[in-house]
Length: 329
Image (tube, rainbow, N blue to C red; front, side, top):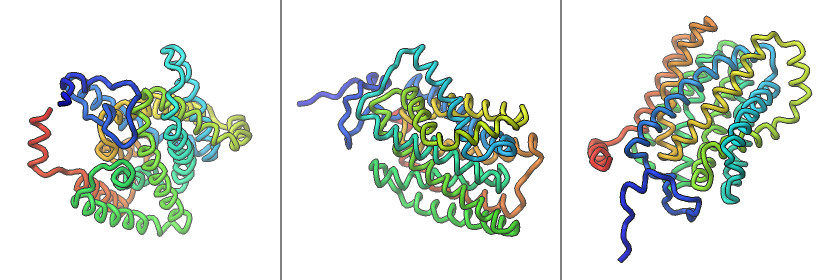
């Protein structure tokens, strides 16, 4: 009869020998000392990604969407490659590359360009509220592609959150078709974000969080190279504050936050990890008010509340499940 490994072994990720479609240490919830570290990593990610919405809004006044995305990714990739060389982690396993390529093109590259464009047409708070629908999309994709659970509560939350997205779109319609386009671009960014995360999740069974983030950023930067000349032109005329914002985006919301995200994602499910982004819109609205003097209108905020309420319902657990998880931890 086969014997189970001691529970203590689950805290350390195994070597990348997992078979696709089977459970791996990367999908095992963190226990012991690893759990606070994963929660702290997720917290760092949420705060830094919230600040990214504000910095994108500021830097976008001088940099075109594609140029800003390329500058951000090049900066982040330089930092990540330097750390990778210092740690001597090298190349990830061959099985990790499909997910790295997909997440690099969809999330690091495509998401950055589309979000930058969208933020030039709507305020930072509205952009964050719309993009925060991504956890619902994440859960759907994770159910279909990764075999994660799709509970009735999730379906209810999806309906509520979709209603919120409609309210946000209608609230921006008064600004003309350009504002509606901004909301649609943020929705596309949410799809790219969710797809990138779901592609990245199984990759973490074969590569470290630093490897996944570094090569994802490099692939995203390669995908944005057609904007290279535009970046050179924008940088020549951009004020120092805009360029510093672009560098900040590369070092902190990209190099640091994407690595802490991958670390936390390697210790939980994709849909549950999406729950950590619930606080992003509130932090973004606060930062936009303090730094950019902009607050979404009442109807926009109401739609955002619906979005967040739907996500909260989707990720809530029955009491029996909560009690069982508490006993297992």
